Image (cartoon, rainbow, N blue to C red; front, side, top):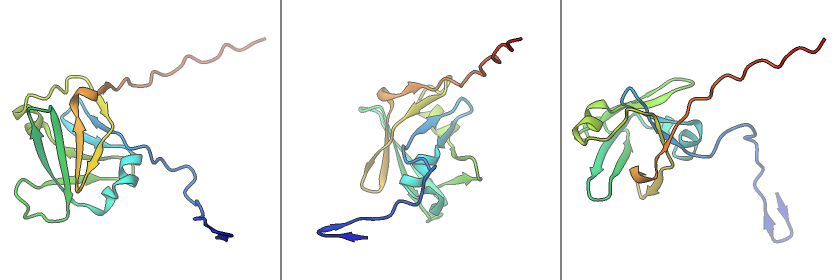
Length: 135
């Protein structure tokens, strides 16, 4: 919509998450939330190549559709879950995944970078007790 010198884009994606988060899960998966899937068009990618920078304690993720890329791992996707099975990668580089940790990825060119020293423990939401019924 043009209004004077402004060219506005209509927002039609209410209810979608655009705040990207990546979780290192206790089962060795690298999981992507809806915000990461939306921000990085992960649904359009079938494979990922993982890299590790020991000096900076960082994981690099290159998303690709080229299954012949050396080290390519499948990106598993369903309606509610998108992840990379990365247990062997995490074990090789001695990345602690004994507790689920949440990270905010940084995009550097084609690579998503997970800075491990910025990880937050991902506490599972505990169900709240029901409100007492007043009589």
